[in-house]
Length: 319
Image (cartoon, rainbow, N blue to C red; front, side, top):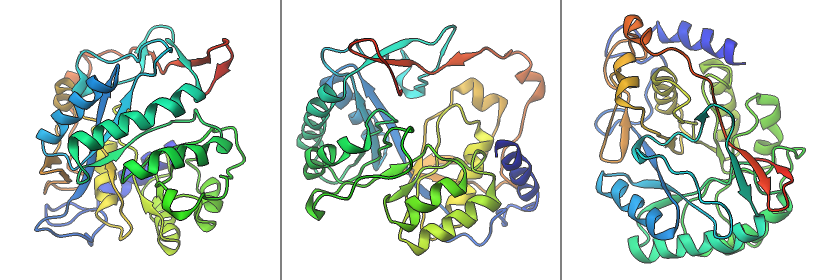
């Protein structure tokens, strides 16, 4: 799907050759220019450090922030020295993390209670479980989390058949996002049975503009909104493609935004920019991204891995 997506994005990306025409015109939001709101990533070893990081993003104008924190009695969460350019993958052999669903379910509501007390109700807060909770644990997660926050993002274990448990009572409902299945056939039951609120897909891994537009059209029918993946393992080309997709669909939800380093931006000069809590695709032709091949050659490929997760008893688990 990634190869198909690369060809599809490249083909459509070259169609918008003037600054006034996006590859996926017409743009659905004009305020006064096409834009889409995005969330930053705040990470801390404990609740206090995470709250400090959320405050930094709020000062930068973010309207939504994803908050992650370390869990007591588990080895400390690895936090990059340059927190603004957070990247969980590490060079060399995969690092090992420790996980406890029970300790997590007790601790994370305390994080969001602290954030709500400090920042009030206006700031949208998000959180990523990745694939660490089984579906049976999600109702308990929602009951603990929903009363103290307004937005959510979660992914149950990828080892399920695509079914989530029935929703708890409406007043305990938190927004559900799903990002594990990049193929449209895997997404269909989650959409048509309204088991999720957001689709967190990647334009390139999802098969490109053509595939993702079809998925978004299906999702719109069932009131499911988009929330494109925007991690730093995706280049500025993929980010620009996501922004052009975002402004072309009516059921846009939010755009994840992990900032690239200055070196990455120099290799991939781009027209998109962040302002007042929103990402703007810019007005350059096509996707609005260039590539400095000579500069890229000075950064040879280095293999990096996401962490390996183990339960407290040493059992391998989903990261």
